[in-house]
Length: 159
Image 1 (cartoon, rainbow, N blue to C red):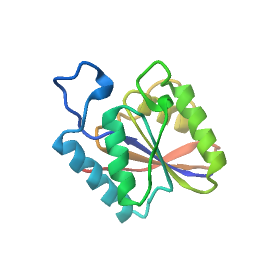
Image 2 (cartoon, helix red, strand yellow):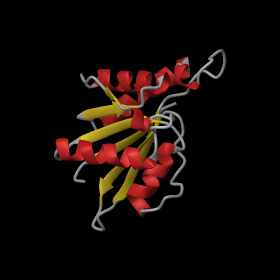
Image 3 (cartoon, helix red, strand yellow):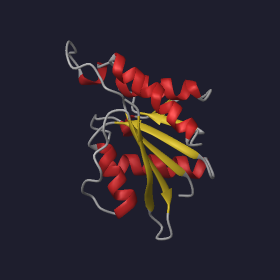
């Protein structure tokens, strides 16, 4: 992959009054985190060209707030969700597809734990274990290194 990857965990989500996990919405803090993260990405010259998100409401809302700051519309893919179709293999497959379709781009994915930390571990270490914990409203910036893997170049978080 020749892209810069932005691996983003959704903002802080509501905990109560939801029958289904995928329906949980962002809290006010979660919305502030998403807007703040968009500002940090702009400040660090990391404007995404493409944003793909889990379809779960909290990730969707995060992606829409970040995308809107850059005049983009996010896409949604089940492979980034916590459902049965969301897996490390699926997220790596998706990233490969995005890399082939977007040469030298900055690609943002928005999703959930533990899928994101496992995806980072595979990309940086080739491991199937766990990478760094990705907190709500946090973005890990990954860039290719000389080994054919990725290196974590930064992590950004808005509170």
